[in-house]
Image 1 (cartoon, rainbow, N blue to C red):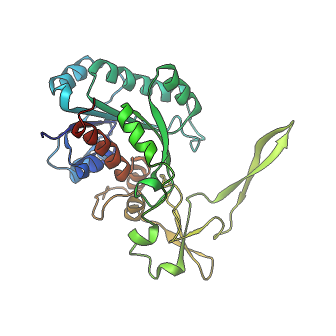
Image 2: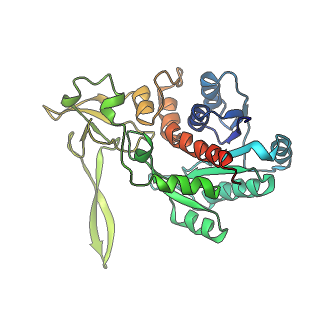
Length: 307
């Protein structure tokens, strides 16, 4: 059987591509708008075509190119930037702009009509409403159910067979923990991990509505989890390593450690020019184990002779 061919749009540093390759698919194209991030992607996958291109505008040429690859073996994935939809973003959150890129990608899928497709996004209420409106299958998964040592809830939309396979894994629980991947933190029993924020929101009720009144500084060990527990969500602000004996912060997690918590395999290359960009690349990527599960679901459907 010929391998599934995959095109990875809004590709970032290569989280989806990594999972697709591990699943046994052939990635023929990755498209990323940021040239520096595309350079990192290419460093990890030097045999692939990694194109620097801004998506979201006219798609006629791209549609023609994708259709020419052959719909029967084609799988299309897109991770439109979720920054404008994320609740973490307090500076320039813009639901209209975030949903514009989602609509663009859904329209592209409708025009190309690949055999399989998938999309990853944050589980935003208006996004769910849009998908319901368009009758698009979707589910919300936790990466911890997919061999990833962090809790990371993401919305996955796509072909019905993929969504069904992902839902079958929901709630199955972690199989990989931080202690299994962070060899740099030994002995494992001594260290704990805390998320990247230093502030805790203070909630009050005003006119019957629970709202944020301000923030207080967290203690060093507040909210920390031991290495035998699934880690907090990895994002662009790195978590802290806490000494479980003294309760003091030891240091920040390195970009490579964050990548391991995302489910990347050891040796995944990041940006040697910018530690800040490295944290951003890791924080924005889809965990490779989740991508692997998505692609494997499509391949299983082919084996069963399904659409």
